[in-house]
Length: 149
Image (cartoon, rainbow, N blue to C red; front, side, top):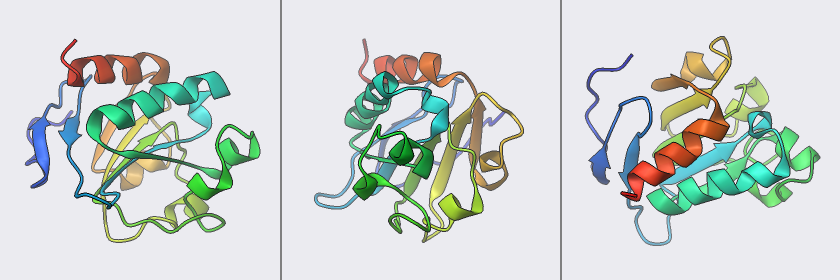
Protein backbone atom coordinates (compact mmCIF):
# COMPACT_ATOMS: atom_id res chain seq x y z
CA UNK A 1 0.00 0.00 0.00
CA UNK A 2 1.37 3.38 -1.03
CA UNK A 3 0.64 6.23 1.35
CA UNK A 4 2.25 9.15 -0.49
CA UNK A 5 3.93 9.67 -3.83
CA UNK A 6 4.89 13.02 -5.28
CA UNK A 7 3.13 13.48 -8.64
CA UNK A 8 5.06 14.12 -11.84
CA UNK A 9 5.30 17.78 -12.87
CA UNK A 10 2.61 17.26 -15.54
CA UNK A 11 0.01 15.87 -13.13
CA UNK A 12 -3.23 17.81 -12.88
CA UNK A 13 -4.42 15.64 -10.00
CA UNK A 14 -3.20 12.49 -8.29
CA UNK A 15 -5.07 9.84 -6.38
CA UNK A 16 -3.81 6.62 -4.91
CA UNK A 17 -6.86 5.17 -3.28
CA UNK A 18 -7.17 1.70 -4.72
CA UNK A 19 -9.24 2.97 -7.62
CA UNK A 20 -7.82 6.09 -9.22
CA UNK A 21 -4.23 6.91 -9.91
CA UNK A 22 -3.75 10.15 -11.76
CA UNK A 23 -4.61 12.44 -14.59
CA UNK A 24 -1.79 13.64 -16.77
CA UNK A 25 -1.82 16.14 -19.64
CA UNK A 26 0.97 15.22 -22.07
CA UNK A 27 2.95 17.78 -24.02
CA UNK A 28 1.47 18.29 -27.46
CA UNK A 29 2.72 15.71 -29.95
CA UNK A 30 4.55 13.58 -27.37
CA UNK A 31 3.44 10.33 -25.76
CA UNK A 32 4.38 11.07 -22.18
CA UNK A 33 1.87 8.55 -20.90
CA UNK A 34 1.06 5.08 -22.21
CA UNK A 35 -1.74 2.79 -21.09
CA UNK A 36 -0.53 -0.60 -22.23
CA UNK A 37 -2.60 -3.78 -22.23
CA UNK A 38 -1.62 -7.40 -22.05
CA UNK A 39 -3.24 -10.80 -21.97
CA UNK A 40 -5.03 -9.84 -18.74
CA UNK A 41 -7.53 -7.78 -20.75
CA UNK A 42 -8.96 -11.23 -21.66
CA UNK A 43 -10.76 -10.45 -24.95
CA UNK A 44 -10.97 -7.91 -27.74
CA UNK A 45 -14.17 -6.32 -26.45
CA UNK A 46 -12.33 -5.23 -23.29
CA UNK A 47 -9.69 -3.21 -25.19
CA UNK A 48 -12.19 -0.34 -25.15
CA UNK A 49 -11.84 -0.13 -21.35
CA UNK A 50 -8.14 0.73 -21.71
CA UNK A 51 -8.86 3.18 -24.54
CA UNK A 52 -11.44 4.98 -22.38
CA UNK A 53 -8.93 5.31 -19.52
CA UNK A 54 -6.25 6.51 -21.94
CA UNK A 55 -8.61 9.15 -23.36
CA UNK A 56 -9.50 10.30 -19.84
CA UNK A 57 -5.83 10.88 -18.89
CA UNK A 58 -4.57 12.08 -22.27
CA UNK A 59 -2.54 8.96 -22.95
CA UNK A 60 -1.90 6.71 -25.93
CA UNK A 61 -2.71 2.99 -25.91
CA UNK A 62 -0.07 0.34 -26.52
CA UNK A 63 0.07 -3.41 -25.95
CA UNK A 64 2.16 -6.51 -25.41
CA UNK A 65 2.80 -9.21 -27.99
CA UNK A 66 -0.03 -11.58 -26.92
CA UNK A 67 -2.55 -8.82 -27.70
CA UNK A 68 -1.11 -8.44 -31.21
CA UNK A 69 -0.98 -12.21 -31.68
CA UNK A 70 -4.67 -12.38 -30.75
CA UNK A 71 -5.31 -9.61 -33.34
CA UNK A 72 -6.90 -7.31 -30.74
CA UNK A 73 -4.54 -4.44 -31.65
CA UNK A 74 -2.22 -3.74 -34.57
CA UNK A 75 1.51 -4.51 -34.39
CA UNK A 76 2.37 -0.81 -34.65
CA UNK A 77 1.09 -0.45 -31.03
CA UNK A 78 3.24 -3.29 -29.63
CA UNK A 79 5.90 -2.48 -27.03
CA UNK A 80 8.85 -4.82 -26.63
CA UNK A 81 11.88 -6.35 -28.28
CA UNK A 82 9.78 -7.50 -31.25
CA UNK A 83 7.73 -4.28 -31.25
CA UNK A 84 8.42 -0.61 -30.53
CA UNK A 85 10.89 0.90 -28.12
CA UNK A 86 9.10 3.61 -26.12
CA UNK A 87 10.25 6.26 -23.66
CA UNK A 88 7.18 7.52 -21.79
CA UNK A 89 7.30 9.37 -18.47
CA UNK A 90 4.45 7.21 -17.13
CA UNK A 91 3.65 3.64 -18.18
CA UNK A 92 0.41 2.04 -16.99
CA UNK A 93 0.73 -1.72 -17.48
CA UNK A 94 -2.71 -3.33 -17.50
CA UNK A 95 -2.65 -7.12 -17.27
CA UNK A 96 0.95 -7.35 -18.51
CA UNK A 97 3.10 -10.11 -17.04
CA UNK A 98 6.38 -8.21 -17.44
CA UNK A 99 8.43 -10.60 -19.57
CA UNK A 100 11.97 -9.47 -20.34
CA UNK A 101 11.00 -9.15 -24.02
CA UNK A 102 8.29 -6.64 -23.13
CA UNK A 103 10.44 -4.74 -20.63
CA UNK A 104 13.15 -4.40 -23.29
CA UNK A 105 10.81 -1.98 -25.04
CA UNK A 106 10.76 0.47 -22.11
CA UNK A 107 13.51 3.07 -22.03
CA UNK A 108 14.18 6.17 -19.98
CA UNK A 109 13.14 4.84 -16.55
CA UNK A 110 9.39 5.64 -16.70
CA UNK A 111 7.17 5.76 -13.63
CA UNK A 112 5.46 2.35 -13.91
CA UNK A 113 2.01 1.59 -12.57
CA UNK A 114 1.18 -2.12 -12.81
CA UNK A 115 -2.39 -3.37 -12.52
CA UNK A 116 -2.84 -7.12 -12.43
CA UNK A 117 -4.97 -9.61 -10.51
CA UNK A 118 -1.96 -11.91 -10.08
CA UNK A 119 0.10 -10.52 -7.17
CA UNK A 120 3.14 -12.59 -8.21
CA UNK A 121 3.47 -11.22 -11.74
CA UNK A 122 6.94 -10.08 -12.80
CA UNK A 123 5.65 -6.58 -13.64
CA UNK A 124 5.19 -5.82 -9.94
CA UNK A 125 8.95 -6.29 -9.43
CA UNK A 126 9.76 -3.34 -11.72
CA UNK A 127 6.70 -1.18 -10.98
CA UNK A 128 6.76 1.96 -8.86
CA UNK A 129 3.12 1.31 -7.91
CA UNK A 130 1.45 -2.09 -8.01
CA UNK A 131 -2.30 -2.54 -7.83
CA UNK A 132 -3.72 -6.03 -7.39
CA UNK A 133 -7.13 -5.74 -9.02
CA UNK A 134 -9.37 -7.18 -11.70
CA UNK A 135 -8.89 -4.98 -14.79
CA UNK A 136 -12.50 -5.36 -15.83
CA UNK A 137 -13.57 -3.71 -12.57
CA UNK A 138 -10.65 -1.34 -12.00
CA UNK A 139 -10.41 0.32 -15.43
CA UNK A 140 -14.05 1.50 -15.63
CA UNK A 141 -13.96 2.64 -11.98
CA UNK A 142 -10.76 4.63 -12.53
CA UNK A 143 -12.11 6.21 -15.72
CA UNK A 144 -15.37 7.18 -14.02
CA UNK A 145 -13.51 8.73 -11.08
CA UNK A 146 -11.11 10.65 -13.30
CA UNK A 147 -13.95 12.04 -15.39
CA UNK A 148 -15.77 13.04 -12.21
CA UNK A 149 -18.90 11.03 -12.94
